[in-house]
Picture (cartoon, rainbow, N blue to C red):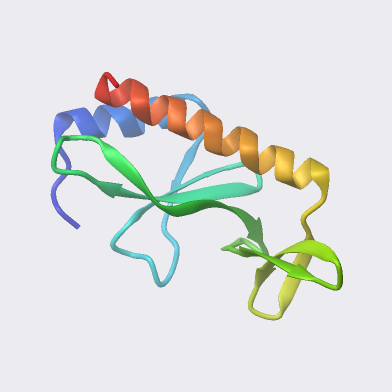
Length: 111
């Protein structure tokens, strides 16, 4: 991973101050993982001194990043053979996480 700029370090500190944890997800060691509650996302430093979200924020299943799938007429968050139903409450938690993360990342770039 490239060395972080003071601006990027300030963004990570702001995230931590808002309750986000910095974590590492295998096999995504080249990205910075951020987690809050049952949700997480991968961040990649940008050349402009900020971060971009890699892929989409994810609901955690057994502590791992999941994908959202449609099965048996329902939505599920799935990681390997494990799954949890993507209930309205879980989808709302993920949406709130994504919005808060987006807001904090934009505040770090002055956008």
